Length: 124
Image (cartoon, rainbow, N blue to C red; front, top):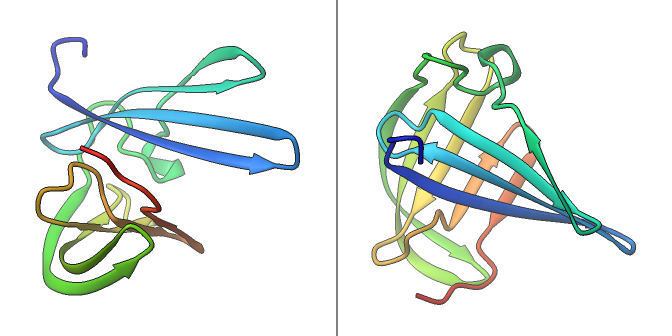
């Protein structure tokens, strides 16, 4: 996307009858945000990547990412070993932990602030 090799991450939040799907395109190198859009009620709304002060990477900023190690993970769509990564925003105010599993192209678990996301289904 825009000449940058990216990974697409999609999350869907529902409340009653309303469902909002948010798509984030993140650079494979550095995990910087390239594009964000939300879709609901049949409309696609472009959004801006979160700035560093909002916990995002912001334009031209790269968060610090370290490999914590391999841990056992159990989520609805996967149980087994997963590599844990710890990311800290450029200003140090926001952290995200991400677990990735072999042969699954999306994270199996991710935590940020008081929110935890777990993989509930997957097909290759």
